[in-house]
Amino acid sequence: MLSAIGRVFRTPDLRRKLLFTLGIITVYRLGVFIPAPGVDYGNVQQCLALGNTSGGLYQFVNLFSGGALLQVSIFALGIMPYITASIIVQLLRVVIPRFQELHQEGPQGQSKLTQYTRYLTIALGLLNATTLISLARSGALLGDCPLPIIPDDSLVVIVLLIITLTAGTGLIMWMGELVTEKGVGNGMSLLIFVSIAAGFPSSLGEILRAQGVNIFIGVIIIGLFTVAAVIFVEQSQRRIPVQYAKRMVGRRTVGGTSTYIPIKVNMAGVIPVIFASSMLYLPSLIAQFNTPTDGTTPPPEWVNWINTFLVSGDHPVYMAVYFLLIVFFTYFYVSITFNPQETADNMKKYGGFIPGIRAGRPTEEYLSYVLSRITLPGALYLGVISLIPLIALVLINANQNFPFGGVSILIMVGVGLETVKQINAQLQQRHYEGLLR
Image (tube, rainbow, N blue to C red; front, side):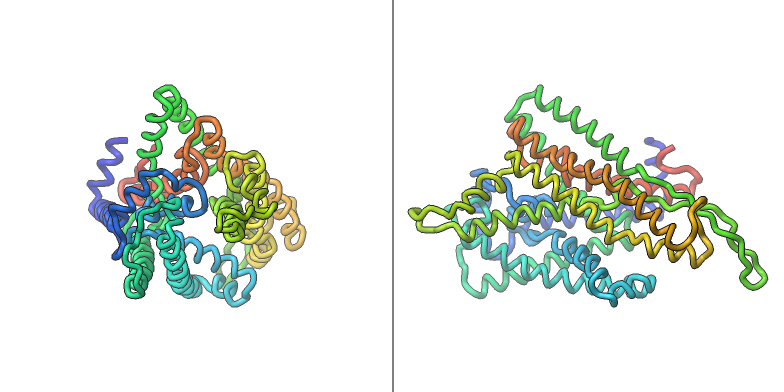
């Protein structure tokens, strides 16, 4: 292993890419701790010390920003606007035929969709920045902290804050694309990986201080088993064999080859978890706006019901609804991203067929059958992994951002595997030996 790492740094081109990637990551992490203009950094730290910021969607977004959100830094919005914009553009392919045409046009159409994603990212950044500053001015961002986060809330300061936070999102997007183009791995994924990994030491340290050495060792053991299970499932796939008949193109004979269609057990990735978390935050947000602020009028009965069952992550009803939403969104997202009819038509167009299955409609029905069966274990796996932080919250009173479970472990393992594969492929091109044997 050490010799393989040595080969990586002895290869000039690969060394340059790795150092460039590390440099971008360093700049990104420095920006997390630079406070935005007009923000009182001392008051922010005192509010964070009170510890009233756990739970809710903004804690979830804070995980993706590497702690920058609750620090109200120049990178407070993190990569979340870009993720949301990418998901929206992908979903719009189903609704807007023009988007689907661009997707099928190849690199030129993809670049156009990427441009739309950038524009939408800036628009969402403006919206998120306005919302974040409104929460910071009211004190609701850091758990109703009495200290003012933005002492001077004049119009000039507010506009400057909105521009700064939106520009921070644009800068992160640009850095991620630079890493994808000139570095190693997918830039956006690596920045999310770094953001989540940055919170691991503090989360584990908090468990060690609050629960003791025995619980800490137990958490590490559970974490290792969880990582092994995630790697096993993420690498698992159902390979559907495909054969291509021989045909004449001009004077050449093409085809006659055998390949396969890889259908992963978890085709949806972490998108269903993000959707489910966002949907579960909506009831609490609606209840918050319908709660009387005078302190004497009792809230409506339905608000009390939401606050009892759908706000606290340690309630069984919350866990059950969360699990069912993840299963539903897994099937929903897979049905959008993988089109059996399109795959069957492409196979028929190029003379491909699945052994024992007729081309055309029977192939489409077979692919739909396999997809629906293999998505079930993938959906259940996502639900169980996502419940680990909530179960840890009940058993050892851990934070909802428990490191070994949920979105954090899925993203870290997935990005880590993909990055190692890319480094391995580049090493094999130059040395005939990869990073891992």
